[in-house]
Amino acid sequence: MHLQQTFHETNRFSIMTKYFNSNIGRLRVIAFLEGVSFIILVFLAMPLKYFADDPSLVRIMGGIHGFLFVILMILLLIVWLEKKLTFLNSVWVFVSSLIPFGTFYIDYKILKPAHQ
Image (tube, rainbow, N blue to C red; front, side, top):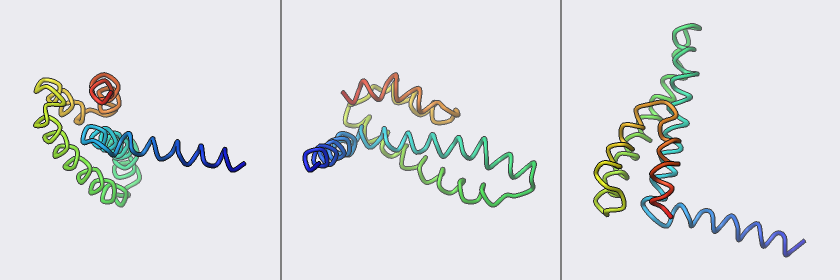
């Protein structure tokens, strides 16, 4: 039992260090969170606002999404300045952040290979 517990703790630690030891790893995490917040905002909060006359979720998710978007853009600039992404790939990451589900596709096509 102790060996299995140690394995899970080590595995969790290695996953965290994989993403948080580099700016491109942090960019991938924030891109994921920004994508999730965008989907919640567009497909849950906005319909609630306009069809159920309840703007409360838009107020909450709008602020969260805006904060994550700003952090995403700052990290994208840092990663581009570190020359981890080309200018064209950085533009694709920016454009994808404006489209629902775009950050997930770009993570698979551009960010994950650059993070390897």
